[in-house]
Length: 256
Image (cartoon, rainbow, N blue to C red; front, side, top):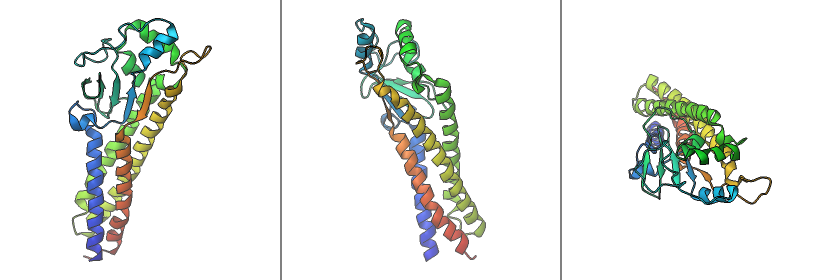
């Protein structure tokens, strides 16, 4: 009976972890209810227009768009909110109305490019100067690390699936496979979650960035924050790490 409890608990934890990871993968693939509610990182740009106007001493003229259907990345105007997933990012003119980019496997997290590509050239040129020497503008660093994190999360998802389905087979070899799969999945998800946490944390530096350092007093007006996808990824890691123990017990004690 103890073995049944062990494998039952491990299977439940693996199932919860896999469910959480599925939610992480669907984040921002479109603007429907569930994908819209899940993101790895969020950027609120609603205060940037006024901050830029104050910094360059020029009234904000058409930096934003209210047309949520206009394509992204074509200088059609800045959106109020940008949310980034593993396969695409979406931008919203309010809390619900928005559009998304095309889906790309291991889509790069390049927030500076995403935002400035929606601006007219004269505004984006100001941004090149104002955000210089910040991690936020370092698209090669952010893009590379987000792609690495994606593949670790993908590997973790695959091995979490293997752990779940092999763990229910009451044989010695499947128990060994489920134990090893759970360990690999937990380590992979841990690395992916840690990388995403790190790069978003570094981007948060623009939240307090002074756009006019010589005169001071003009904060960027952009707010970078963790998306709930990162928290879901950490929760999946916790479930997989916890599942490793009963899988291991079942593996070591099973006689059949």
